[in-house]
Amino acid sequence: MEEGARSCLLQSRSSLEQDIRASYLMDHMISDGVLTGDEEDRIRSKPTRKEQAAALLELLLRKDNHAYISFYNALVRESYGDLASLLHNSLPLVSPEAEKSFSDGGTRYVQAVLSEGGVPQRPVVFVSRPALMNRVREKLYHLQKEPGWVTVFGMAGSGKSVLAAEAVRDHALITGRWLRGEVFPRYRSRISFLPQS
Picture 1: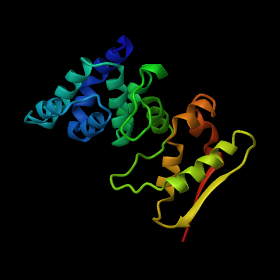
Picture 2: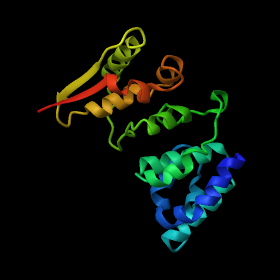
Picture 3: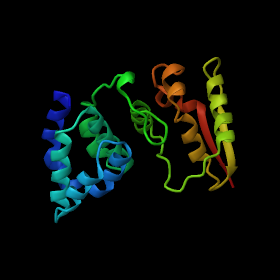
Picture 4: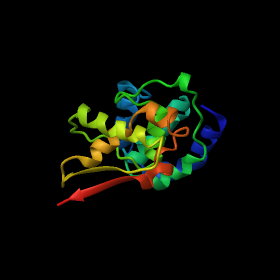
């Protein structure tokens, strides 16, 4: 792990130990491939929540940059935004060659960009709609040529936000075509979700 990231973890350790629930974060880290089932069991065996948090942080300090990024993303996903902000400035840079794919098809870089842009994570119960997702992606690709809007509409609860989030969960869309990953901060005003009652 980079020295800046390690130092930030050590400085923020008491706040993290006080507030986090390790069990909420570990599922994300396991799915990212930075934590094993055995490591999870060792952490869960600790009797108190604070001891579990301390054990997770101790383990994290012995891991690499990917573990730090995964931990940061888990904090964001579990609504620990105040704690994630403590770690944000020390996020290590990871080269595209060193990235491994996440289980949902995105890279660590894509996950970091989407988390920072406020894109919700994929829900536990998820039905893939590739035809609709590809149509939304196609429309987003057209925005590189000229300004415009991509509007996703439908009945309340029909999955518009999930569909839009899945459409932007594409490494090529974010990195290759949209100014080095600035898709949401730069183009957020061009993407509109209009609920229809």
